[in-house]
Length: 481
Ligand SMILES: [Zn+2]
Image 1 (spheres, helix red, strand yellow):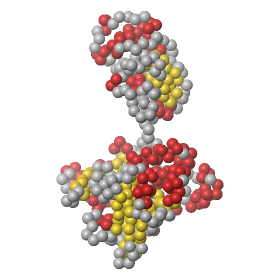
Image 2 (image 1 turned 30 degrees about the vertical axis):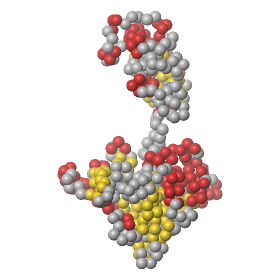
Image 3 (image 1 turned 180 degrees about the vertical axis):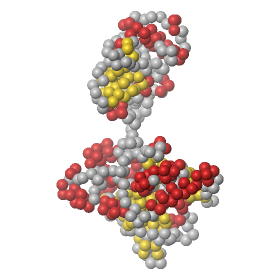
Image 4 (image 1 turned 90 degrees about the vertical axis):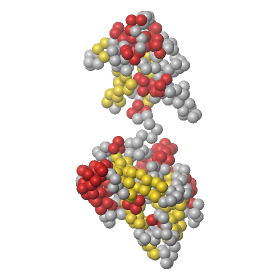
């Protein structure tokens, strides 16, 4: 026992009786105290300094050298994966065991607490074939017998999370950035029938949504019920004070600016909430007025342009927090968001969310930090806001009855041209689905049809025609980012 760990044990070093060497290899379920005593005894007898300069505990723990690609040090083992040594603490490996003794087969709930793991836990047997790591423990959690074997495959050792953020279904997935021209060529349409009833078509739709942040559904039956059907195929409806679904129609004296016939600038919805909805649907039921076109901008691409041209302004916008509010008699909300949210808050990392909603901005006059840095912040914000308005960024289309746009609310900015209600009618039905739910659907699609998910690419008109003739696997990858 090292000087570092000894105080944790709270047992006098000399009071622990020596045990025969063989006892270490035959399994027993010792109490924590016994186990710690056992480790203490043999530490100095079997430890050797390897020729590579590290202290090798294989003899002490296993009674033999470690398998190839593994080295055992005191509180962790190093395993070679993809030519790189990955250090894994025994305690955390034990904690990660997914066997049926540790995790209920059906509920997938854990059957032990992290705090149940003895503070000193080491392996008594280690197997490694380059693909799977197997460990038997010499001091396991009380109640776990000698048959307990912990197994880990390589993928799990690299990232054990169910939906890793940097995977192609996670929050930090790579995206396909688009501008007006790209979107005019590459917009993705799926029929309502295929979206609802053809699982492969649905997987392709979700993959396009994951990459582009916006897709369109067409040939939707003329019914107010449809927006809910389309939304719940992706996940449960997100309820808000607007209701589980809502309508955008021209009404007099509307409280929300979306409910009038004047133009509505680029914005994101519900930024004044703590969890703004991740995805939004707009189903067009009527649109016979003059005007009323929908406009969309890929704010991630704009953020990327800002980062590329003016890294310092990009960084400023990761620090500038703006206030948003909804302040009426019945509902009072406010929240604050940085304009750009990046992975771990590091401006060098990927953008996770953009937060921009001028119609719902609230005063920031009480923020001393903003007062102090306003010249830099103003310049950075003007750069971003100006870029959003450039004509080459905005994709415009007039939704027809029977068409629905599904878009990522925290990425794709939306706006609407003004329309004339004296002639014709305009009626859109809307709904929200939370980001968590849609990410889960992305993962489900990927698991169910891995090949389709993996090979679905954003196609321009030329590639789309070719793909239709030859099958999609031959289509070129436009790449992401
Ligand atoms: Zn287990």
